[in-house]
Structures are given as C-alpha cells and as structure tokens.
Image 1 (cartoon, rainbow, N blue to C red):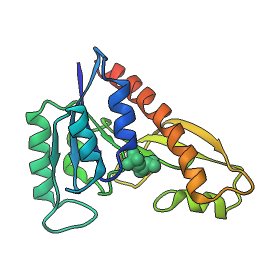
Image 2 (cartoon, rainbow, N blue to C red; image 1 turned 90 degrees about the vertical axis):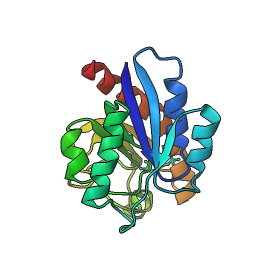
Image 3 (cartoon, rainbow, N blue to C red; image 1 turned 180 degrees about the vertical axis):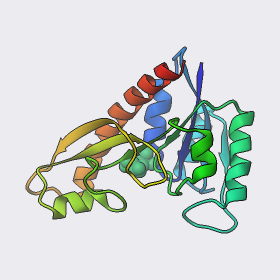
Length: 191
Ligand code: GRF
C-alpha cells in the first residue's frame, strides 16, 4: 500500500477529489493531510472524511518553512510512513530538506499548460495572452518553481467571453479528473 500525504492550504477541492477516488483502493491510501492554515476549508473536508490531518505552519515565513521546520515535518512524514507527497493548492515552497528526502516523490498540480504561465495568476495570464487553450498540469516538484518533469496535462478551451472565474471552474473540473489518475500511475511505479 502506497501511503500518500496531501499538502493543501485552501479550499481542498482537489484533496476531496483525490480522497474520493482512492477511498476503496487497495493500492493507495490517502493517509495524511498537511495544512498550513488553521482555518482552511480543507481541514473540514479531512474531518468529514475521517482522514488524519496536521496543521503545520511556520513561525518565521509566510511562503516557505525554515530548514529546521522542514526537518521537523520530514520526521513526521517518516513517522507516518509516507511514501508520496501530493501538493494540492499548498501555498509554500518546499526546499531541499524534503525534496531530497522525497526525490521524485513530490507531485504538484498547476492550473496552466506548463511550461506556459508558471507562478501566480496563470488563469488570468492565459486569458490576457489571448491563448486558445488553458488547462492543468501535474508535474514533479523540483527546487525550480513549476519546472519539474511533466506527468500529465488536460486542455480546457478558452471561450471568447470567458471570465477568469468561469474558466477556473472548468479547469478545476479537469484537475479533479487528471490528478487522481496521475497519482495512481506514479504510485504504481513505487510499488
Ligand atoms: C488548484 O487550482 C491547483 O491547480 C492550484 O491550487 C488550486 C487548489 O484548489 N495549485 P483546491 O484547494 O484544490 O480547490
């Protein structure tokens, strides 16, 4: 059984889709939610689904953890026998302590067709650029942001009158289908 920790900071719609997809799986167990925002909606989802969660935040930083905090989190992940880390709207940048310990075992989903529109506001950037398509990409996490190996993508057509929120809603729907499938594939290779 591959034990997965999902890291999330916000609404948790991807966490919910992933947990739902694997709820009866004999190969993949969604074992832990790591959240850095004590009031995030994703925590309510973990409670509802009876998935263990930990609120793990930083004393020092808003967008990352200190080295000693990453070490502490790594100890926890090892204690819980976590095999694979899945970032789903986690708003902190992971550094080498966790990334080297979990080399090729940290995934992320980004709401653009990478390598287009890395970083913040990718959906707005796709509309502003006049792109025909937006979408989502699951990729390996490396120290360079949104630049690791691409593992899967879904395209979403941008309509002429699309507002950012409408397009984002359709991208989210695509994410909920794509992410669990890629997780299953990667977990299959770790067995
Ligand atoms: C998703 O759009 C994902 O691509 C991005 O953060 C968002 C998280 O949404 N990395 P949710 O919390 O899963 O609803």
